[in-house]
Image (cartoon, rainbow, N blue to C red; front, side, top):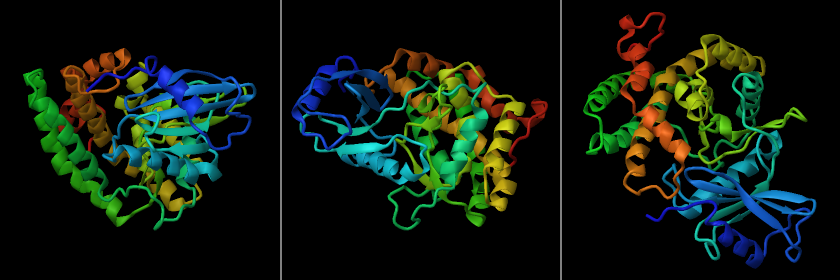
Length: 357
């Protein structure tokens, strides 16, 4: 699979903007000079900032799907989600969708540019929690929206995690001691996932982002506004998924060196609860979230273990050096044990609050 770079792809983006008859974008003229430059590169997308006089917007190019969707379906899935979210003002405004693959051999999305910086876990926890509460309470058509349903939440993460771990377990590059521990984790999680009966008995369905890493947030310090800008993997599921994914170490450590304390997490959850209108959700959200935490750790570690193997076998289109350093950290036995020992060996971990299957 050929390696893609946001910088080497820049000429194709310029050709696209010169050759494509774009839909109406405020302030954009197809005949006037423009500037385009790289903005950010993820594992499955490249983002470019486009400027022309007073017009500034983002061109997003999708190169793969974490949801298992076809290339044309993935970019449309994200575009349609942004359309649903517009009333809540929590995400970029979608301008256009192009999944024709005519000039660029990938799906393309045009959307508004939101100035600011990445979320700071030491400053923005409460504000982020309140924003999640806002889109979790957005009224959407349950039966007609396009979002993938989260039917059996813990089993869903478990089964996907096991498939990803199999890539690591079957690799000649794998650490034998870590393989042994991963098998223990799989055995434990295979039993603990049956606690998803809690969610089946007491469902609370809404739009969830499912990937609330700090770099997917934009905070404008001048205006005080905050938005969640990456909607690559949204689903129709329980709000606890976002809260858990937001607070677990596999998320906070991905782009920072921060591991939230119990006090940090408690403050975040209080801010979320204070923004809820539904009393029952306020009363049950901590239990819902606690049940999710080890499974979101499994989700993060299993993806990293798979990607660690793929990075060394040319199976990743986009490669990022910072990502490689984190992948190596997340397949370190000591780190993995710090995540799961409180659940696998609770008597050896003082002060833990494990889930007991």
